[in-house]
Length: 360
Image 1 (tube, rainbow, N blue to C red):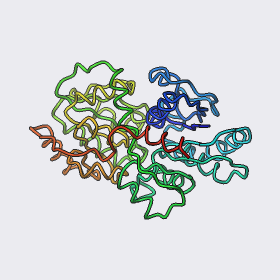
Image 2: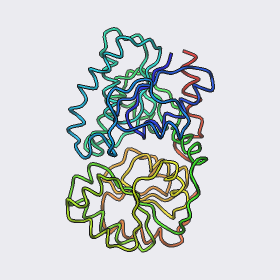
Image 3: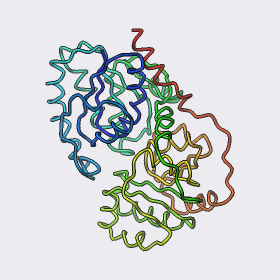
Image 4: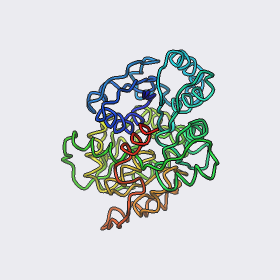
């Protein structure tokens, strides 16, 4: 009855609550993994079944494409071909996709044009927009494509719902909230409490930044302006970019920074829960910072999580170095977290999603 297609760890993290809700109601689901990231360990940690089918062997590196965006785009036709072969034997009522990846865009468009389609394609994270196809790229394009070709669009917020209505999408729009609220609650039960105190958590990995020497120089200057201890679980592609632009020594020699390899999602959330504030260029981290009520400095020009900017703890810097330094100084002091309502909901999104689908 249900088929789920995922490629990245971020997609898996946010889809786990839906999987668990299906299991709770004794509904079976067929799990297709496109192979963008390696899922094995995360499936074990979240206690969900491993994929029923893997279309491409997952890479050993952080990502299949490692700073090669156009390689990811070229991967699309090969993925579409493999999906068509699966679709020819697929018996399902609903095909679920999530997020803003190549997997999401290719699956939703391939499903739309498949001539023998007997199912409804559903986007579990619909309506987020930065309104700039190059920020983030290609994620913004992937979201627009998915929302154009899906039959059911589960909007993650009131603003997301408005975005979809303005675009006159053909799919049915259902506002549910964001499953990330549930994902965080699940994951916090599994990580070990952080022993660090009064520190800043850093996470940098966006392609738009890593592929620009000018941007990376600004980011290094910003990070080096922090006076509190910094913990930075660094991506291999980020380290590669810093070395490529001769910036690695500038951060490596900063005794204020503690580096580590990537840590599990569960442990990362424990570190975020304990830190004073976060510096990132990521997407989901902006949502997680709202759930954990941690100030978040966003090193981007645009964000598709616009809702967070109205809470008073998410700050879009547009990579303005002086503004960001002033912001860091403010957050290092006695910054008081303002009262706000999480725009992504009450932690019942997966129940709303499953309830809607099983009653069709």
